[in-house]
Length: 162
Image (cartoon, rainbow, N blue to C red; front, side, top):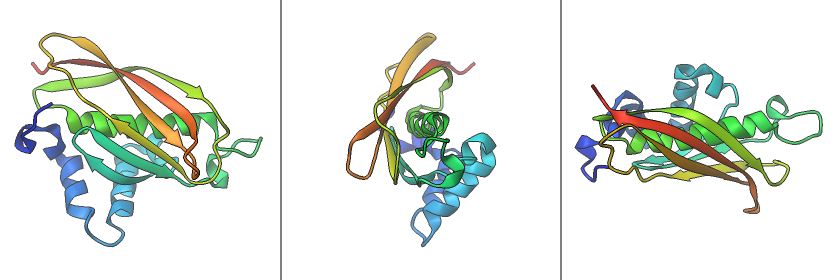
């Protein structure tokens, strides 16, 4: 990961939109809708990006009917989607422009029923990439009292751009 923001992927169009919008009233909400428009499946859960910086993302999800399952808690796949988008934003914000990556595996560990406002956070440090490699990152999803509801692990294939 580059310490110089000018050499970070966090200067791309998505992150330019974040930096432009985050300071305005409703700006993070507007950015979250933009992200959902760019990535429609991710947008289907209506997550709200609260914080985004090089190697870090914090995203919340309100508990509402459209993300629930028949047992009265947030659906497992909605939790997986929340963890994937959170870890993905953190990873993309950490990658240098000379490295590209793609998720090759996702897994989730469900620890407690997801109810109420859920918050996902992910911290990423990208190792030097001199040849194709796998890099595992996690997002932890907590409920309003701070209990871990779900831990999502994403395995990324990283390689230099050609």
